[in-house]
Length: 117
Image 1 (tube, rainbow, N blue to C red):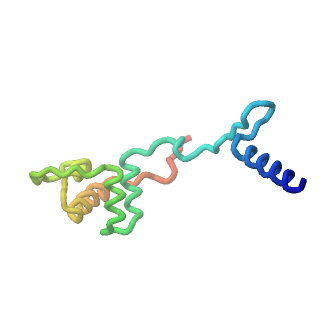
Image 2: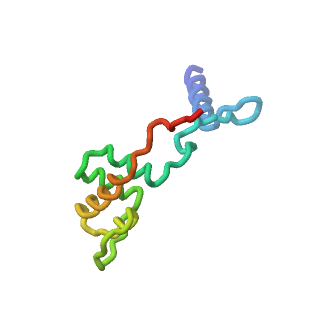
Image 3: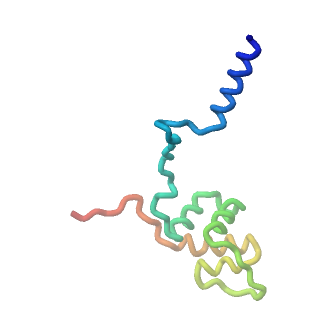
């Protein structure tokens, strides 16, 4: 008798874990919290300037820049005319210097917008 009671409890527990929780005959729906993905997307300039918070001359900063503007080296070397052209620089040190040259020249966004009332 004890053995059959144990088997019944174990099988009931297994069935309860296999099916979703029910409320009023309907599966329970879980609401997920809002994530940062729902926030307003940042501009390219803001994402590039965020890379300046990473130590200069490091692979991490270059990876940050490459995350915003993925590298796409061209076989023929060219002088970058805009920050987007840095992706064509093959050598990592040169690409990092290229990004730094453009991003350092950009005006830094104010932390708080000026309100004129």
